[in-house]
Image 1 (cartoon, one colour):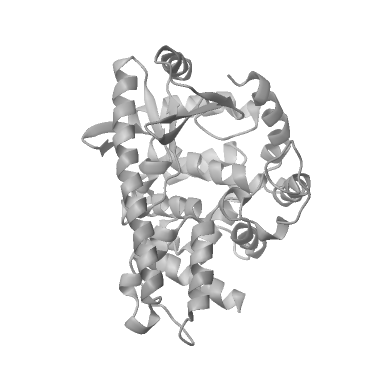
Image 2 (image 1 turned 90 degrees about the vertical axis):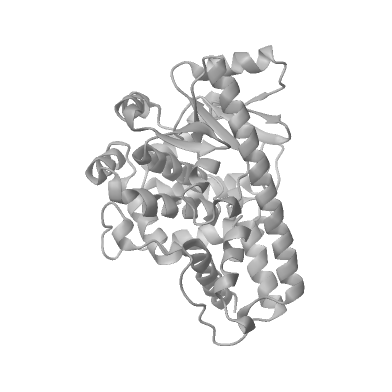
Length: 363
């Protein structure tokens, strides 16, 4: 029954994400079925997207009124949080630029702008990267303003600003392989004139060029797949980006970027998953994937791991360590290393090395 409900879940996800389609049911869903769907919507941080499917359902297909009201309350909270986050983004961007710091908004609200209903995408925090020496300038600015922050692995820092969690990233892209650094820097220069502008609360916020946004979102997905997993929300991000920008990007150049960064084999898996499960039209892909590409193993891992692996029920009773936040961490990291090594060996190998290095030298 769980497999049937999982298939129904993906139907609802696609309907809500694209605003199209009909829910095909063999029999009416019970309250217990809806609790299963809601549980996984929360695990994958797509409550708002599933909610958006309700307007396309027939009356007898909707969840019970009590559950629907709870869902509506949750979506209202998402909308309020996004409004608050947008206010902080506009304020921070203005503060940075006034102090000669050039920030670029990563993922989050920038990607949400490509959604059918942007304020229904859950955004966990604000992510900034910076041009030139902006990371150091921003770090010094926080010190000057007595804003308490914490340096974290992966060459980042984080803090709370008006109760909104904010992260600064020294590196624009989540590549672990240090030998790609010069190439990635050249890409940033090459696409600098094609950066996009997003108006948030009447403030023009700088985003990466679309090709680099795709690279950024997709390498972020891979980064977490190699570790503990990632939620379906990030796959929705990738799908909405492709759907919106593929018509006007340089497709051949993007494919070359994937090849040069060693991602193309994994990108082919990603593309098939986006088409088969997220509902991205094949025509919205920049290039086709090989026939016979198998992704069943990957979607199973994504489904069970949920948002960054925190809700993976398979490891609830696993061994815990003072070195890791999640149970059975060593086992999980080793399993994912083996899964993704044949698709992105350089990234898989570099992860533990760079993770340890950045912990001590990433400030």
